[in-house]
Length: 372
Image (cartoon, rainbow, N blue to C red; front, top):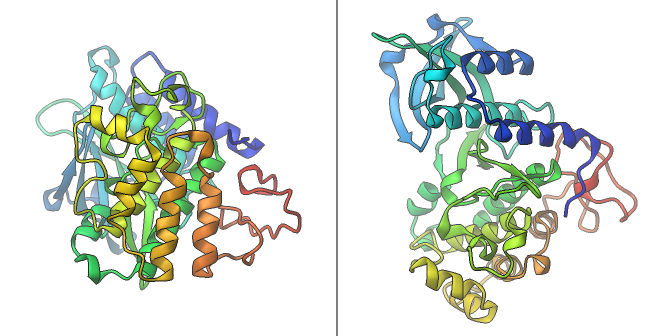
């Protein structure tokens, strides 16, 4: 299990407290969190809600594309809006769904506003909060204003034929996803729903960058109940009948799911890793030889990058959580191949870009960095 350093524990405790609240999380709590985190609050004049374009709807929120007009400039952004409004003073009329939506929003704010995560290259960037007034009924919707993604990773993959993406380019995208997970795991967080749809692609400058998104349902290691996640990208321990069920709240589940994302990347998401009834998926995922044989048979091995990605899948997709590498080891494998490591091929890398620590001892490890 990852040891969480002192700077991480505050974020871990915050996430634990947010998810453990039994009472409803009302409008005033959202305002208090936004103020405490020092997030900018956009005035009503900064938004033209009539021009918002729908992008997608999830269980608790809907995302729109819109423009922010502030300080004489216009920026195209993503606006993440709760699916139902809140009243300002009567929290007792709010539903359980509203509570979960607000908890998710507060948690995402708390994670992305952290001083060391807010500018991480492989996490989305939260810009501001906007309180949208309801029309015709009393209420308000606190919205997250974020940078606008080009697409999610699934759309990125499906838009190109398998031969249209070079293996090195795919390896670089997978390395970026791994680096985003490194940042979360270094804080003791477990994403719990790693899949192509929860990876967003951003154009930053002239470079297309993959980021790990949808952090509102992250959990912490060892919590009483695991994050549910998405069955098609489950690790074996998420199945109710798994002999590894006790490991369902560990970060190793993200490593397994990451291996399935790499498989999806190489095959351009032509199908889900396990397009079968969940009972058959459970059986297959507990038979390593059969499971890996099925996945690897569909992965090319023509180039060094092809072989590297096959190796990543072979190491990550193991039924026993203790036989999987940490995400830091996986990230190091990818970076060494790509030549992206800031510390050279034999030294580990702290996942926080602002740290800059160049370790001289192999006793140091990225998941216990005491410098940043």
